[in-house]
Length: 419
View 1 (cartoon, rainbow, N blue to C red):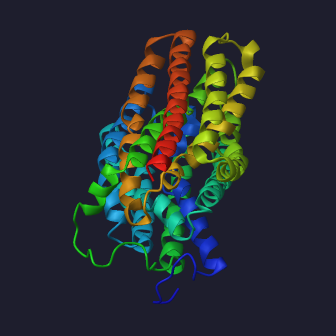
View 2: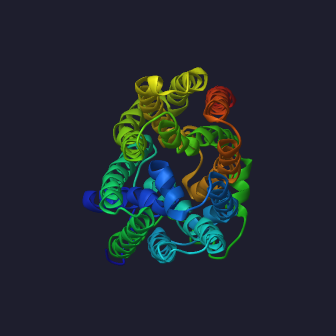
View 3: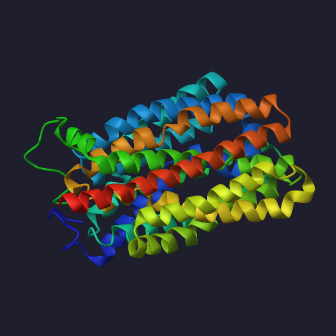
């Protein structure tokens, strides 16, 4: 897009929305392999021929390296341009996904998941929120991040139904899974090319005077109360969000066919966010993100409590699907706007990458422990015991997220009085 440096004020509408589209789709595309279990939990288990506990270990390994990468990824995003990090992230994801499709051993899978946690998160995630911020004003960031998550939902829904079609085309689950992974690798390669061609160089990506790596931006971010309050809220919201993969296995456990459960899960994961993220993003801009998150998490907690105490049988299938869709709608909305509390609490754009890194390091810690614990419960307890524990813990997490959002409101009032 030329050598001229761009800003949110000078960028063309086409380029602005092209950047939003690429970065938003990237939040789905670059993690397609990781996210496969959210819609295809049973197919992943069958295709890899591993247990719930082993799959939990793989995702725990991913979460461990991703947690380390989140920390440094935020600093990296304040030092290297979005254009180059996006291109490299997609390219490396394509290579790893192709390797994943070659039927690796369980030991090789551990290496792949470790590398996924490092390369995609270290390189890409730090620019996830910052890129949207660079094409947005402070006033319309909440709306744009909501639209961004709507794009994530759209691309996720499309890819999921294509993936279901691929799975259904093969009688052998392992062959179907390999083909789906090759499809994912190809998509990542395409986005690597698009990122390099379309994403411009921004004038305010970082402070040019700080050419060398230093911890100044990180220290500033660590001192900002808004960063910590937003981060804690993300921790509890994400604990619930990352656990929704288990609603797929829950539906099959109470009698749904795997393909039907996957279709419902695709709608739950991506169809709901297609509408909820833009809608709730708009509400957050009018009513503030913190207030919006409180109400979204309240509804989420009620739905999860219902799933925890309800009978785990086929007779509960329709109510279960309804509760899952409703909680997914409001949870996706809350997840989509949680980062907006960084702008609500006046975190400066110059340290936004570092703030996003802190948000991600602590906010996404559940990736380290949720899957191993849930996988162990599924292999240890019966359907009632396992899912009562899972949904009960998630309901408590939703309540704790509400409390964190309320504390943001308390901090804002105090800050206004002091100023």
